[in-house]
Amino acid sequence: MKNKVYFIPTYHSDGIQVINDKLKKLLDASKALDFIQAKDKVAVKIHFGEDGTDSFVRPEHARVICDAIARKKAAAFLSDANTLYRGKRLNSKDHLEVAHKHGFTKEATGVNVVIPDDDRKEDTAAVDIKQKFIKTAKVGRIFIDADAIIAINHFKGHMLTGFGGAIKNIGMGCATRQGKMAQHCDVSPVIYADRCTGCGACAEVCPVGAIWIENNKSNIDASKCIGCASCIGACPTFAMFVGMETGDATQAKMAEYCLAVLMKKKEKAGFISFAVKINKECDCWTSENSRIAPDVGILASTDPVAIDKASFDLVNRACGKDIFKATHPEQDGLKQLKYAQEIGLGSIDYELVELV
Image 1 (spheres, rainbow, N blue to C red):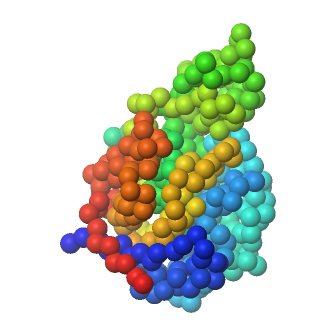
Image 2: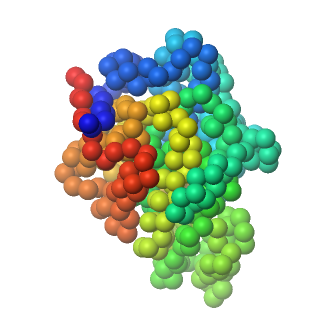
């Protein structure tokens, strides 16, 4: 039996209230929150957006979901984990400031915003999964200890994984900085010397000193590189790219980390994906991040694999081609879905239920 993915179209011209009305209709029809019980502690995983960007699901939409959880007499909280790369979300204090700056306050969303601190042992959890790439996953304990989890995903492109959706939001997004490093550790950027101006922006942001400038060109020590991609985001001339073969392992590890978070919540997890403001790169990107597709709509499901595949299909249908392969030809995002299905996260086959 195919798992259902519910979908309601939205348009660029839709205002916040129109989208919220559609979101309420989607939640009612999909029953995506029905597994939540009174007194459940519900982690609502969301990306608060990088400082200075607007590439995130708006707090007004998060409020609709949190209010629906509250009506079930459950206690929700919004959360995300800190980043691996340098920036305003590197530590819990600054990360929380960015979240508040972007409107994610208790007053606006109705719930607390909680960001675990990697420096506190009690905020981290080691989950034994014994998979092909990851044996023990390092994730935020807050996501493991929660009774249920709701993932609010922003569907978009990604340089390493082709696209990012529910699997990335949970797998990469719930990982501690050590866990993120484990997922990226096979990734070392390639420098295109003809594009490099030797400005030093990459060396300045590298957290491990793996990059230096010599003869007005960047050089990288792959043995030191932790794969955080800070240099790629900082490069103003797009002289740094990820090698063609490196995305596959990252996608597999990301799926395994998603399994670590969800393995004891298979009946207590829901996914809501916003296929709007579909950018070329992830929401962490602070450089040029162009839109690559028209707004498509909002999806809901209890299957992370199915909702990602449905999102992928709907966006590509709207574009008339595989826009993710067109923008990141070196990556095949379907590999994350196939591997996720292989390890039991969900099913690529789905039944789309479109609401009007």
